[in-house]
Amino acid sequence: MTATILTQTYNFSAYMIYLPIVITLTVLVSQFLFKNSKTFMIDIFHQKEDIAMATNSLFKIGFYLLNIGFALCIIEFFQIETVERLVVALSKKIGGFSIYLGVMMLLNLLLFLKGRKHAMNKDKIKQEEIVKS
Amino acid sequence: MYNIVSYLLFLGISSYITIDVGRRCFNSGKIYLEYLIKDKDFCLTVNRILLASYYLVNLGYIAINLGFWNKISRIEELLTNVSTRIGIIVLILCALHFTNITTLYILRKKITIK
Image (spheres, each protein chain N blue to C red):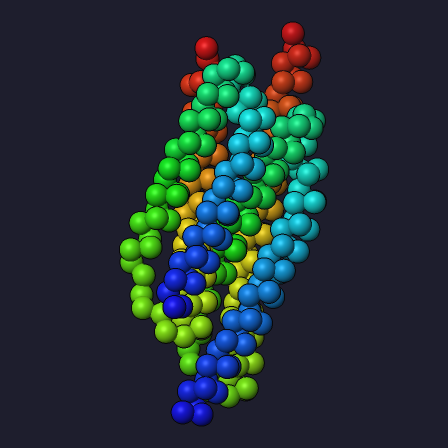
């Protein structure tokens, strides 16, 4: 009887530690990413401020949805019996999630860089046409 | 007892997320669509239809989801069940959102002809 109560408390505290850490991590990372991506967006959309901001917030919504959804989907822990197990399981899960978050951030940055390159090429072609005519 | 609490939590959180995300997407999607379509009335109509179908799909899925609910007897089970289900719904929202953006982007050339 005591054993079941113990496992219950540990699992519950694991969830209670896991959820706020994961959500604050996601919010911090996406705020950081999308504060810096404004310059990329302005470059991509040829200095048009409003459309750049709108697209930025659209991507931000997508990023939040993807990461928080993934974090909530992998929440389930096995039965945790001791405090050591709790620490190990929590660090495993949070570490895995941070690696995933880092990969996502890098992918997003690559997307922005690619879009910027594309836009720059377009600008160059336009300028050359103007020069020719 | 726990089942009813979990239903209420799930319905509240997931419908709040759906409606809030829909509103935000509607607001910034207006400008995005105007950039792509360049016809204000048409763009507003498209945006409204997208919003309505989005609400229908997601709220419908949330309602259906209540049917496949496990029996919940402890508070940890409540937490895992509710969060996993909300996570699945959020991932569906995300997939819909990105397909929306890419479809509009791909269709852009065909639409801007007029």
